[in-house]
Image (tube, rainbow, N blue to C red; front, side, top):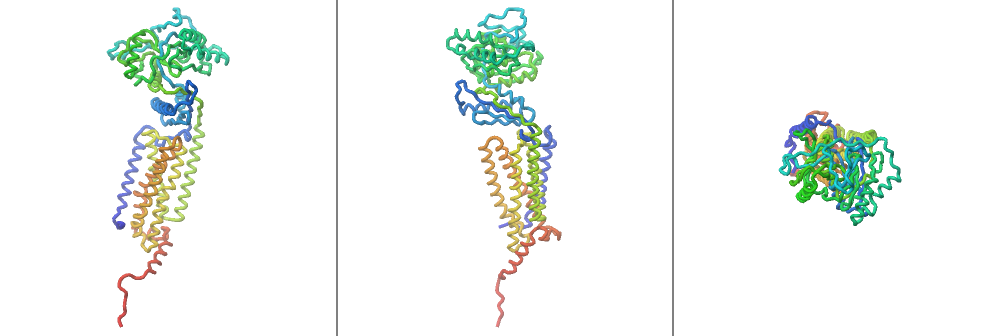
Length: 565
C-alpha cells in the first residue's frame, strides 16, 4: 500500500541532492591541477595511434598467450613512462596503442623496445673512426673501456662494493658529411649480419662471420633502414648503440631481461650525478654476480631489440644483485634507461607497422559534431515534454539539466583520478542516456495519468503513481545497466567507452529521479497556487475530466436508500 502524500518531505531530498552537487563541484574546482573539463580521447582532441606488429624468429604466427603477455607489459611500460589516457589493445597479431594529445612520439618509440638481454662486449668502436691515442684491441678479445666510459657497480651503500661507477664521457658525434648508404649497401650489410655462418653451430665460422659483419656495419644515422639483425639469444650479434655513433660485436646472451625485478633512476647527491639503480631476481643475481666477478673492467651490453641501449664497464664484482649504472646521464636519459630496463622484456619482438596522427582540428570537428547531435536530441526531448506535459515538462527539463551537471562533474573527476578519456563513442553513450533519463520521467508521468483516470486528484495520485512507477523505472534501468556492463566486459576499444558512459548515466539517472524529479512533482501537487494546481497547466486536463466522468458514473457504495411503504 502506498505511503500517504504527507509522508514524503521533498525539501530534504532536494537539500541532499544540492549537497551532493556542491561537494562534487568543490572537488572539481578546488582539487587537482588540471582544467575543470573532462579529458578527451584521440578522436576528440587529436593524438597518435601506433600499430605494432609481432614477429617470430621462425616466421610463424605468434601464440595468443605471448601476445596477451606482451600487451600487458607494453601497457605497464606506457604507464611507467607517464603517458596518460593511453589505450593498449590487441588486434589480431598487432598491438594497437592509442595516445591522446601531444605524447605520440613516446608511443612511437615503444615499437623499438621489445626483447631485452645482456651480452658481453667482444669489441666496440666508433662508427666514424677518429684519431685514437692507443691501438684498438685485437678482434675477438674483450675491450677495456676507457676510464671515462659509463660503468656499473654495486651501490655505495651495498656491502658488495663500496666504490662508485665510472663517469661517462661525451658520446662521439657522427660525421655530418658521411655519405648516405645506397640500398645495395644496406642489403649487403644485412646479409652479413644474418648470413648462415654467423648463425652456424661451428664457433670458428661464427667468429669469422661476426668479424666480417662487424667490419662492414656502418650505423649511419642518415639511413632510415635500422638494419635489424638476428635476435637469437644463443648466437653472436653485431649491433649499433649510443645513438648510432658506436658499433659493437657481442657474444651470445648470458642473462635475459626477464631476470630484472626493478629499475629506477635517482640523483646521487654525493657525486652530483644521475644514476640508474637496477635489481635482479634471485637467479639473475647469481648469474650477474658470476659474470661481474669474471669480467671486471670489461663491458656488458644491455641489448634491446638488437640495439645496444647501454654498454657500461664492470667496476667490481656485484654479488648482491643490487647494481648501480653511472655515467654523465641527464635526468631524462637516466629515466629512459631505467624504463627500458624495467619494462623492456617482452616475449615477442615487435616492429612499428603503422603510426597515424589525428590532428587537433579533426578532433575539434568531431567534438562539435557530437555536441550538435546531443543538442538536437536534447531539444527534441524538450519540445516533446513541453507540448505533451507542459509544466511537468518544465520539471523534466530541469531534471535533465541537473542530470547533465552531475554527469559532467563525474567525468571531470574520473579523468583526474583514473585517467578516463571521453571519446566519440562515449559521447554517443551520453546522448543515448538522454533518452533513458527522459524515459524514466515518461513512465512516472504516464502512471500519474493512469491514477487520475481512475478518478483520483493530482495530489492523491502522486504517491500512488510513484509507488507503482518506481518498480518499472528500477527494472528498466537495471536492464540498461546490465547490458552496458556486459558490453563493457566483452568489448574492446571505443565500444568500452560507449558502454561505460551508458552505464554511468543510467546509475545517475536513478539518483536524479529519486532525489529531484519525484520530490519536485510532490511539491507541485501540494502547492496552493491556482496556476500550479490547474490540471490544464500540467497537461492533465483531459485525463482529470475523464476521471471525474468515470467517478460520477460509478454506483454509490454503502446501504441502498429504500423508501418505506
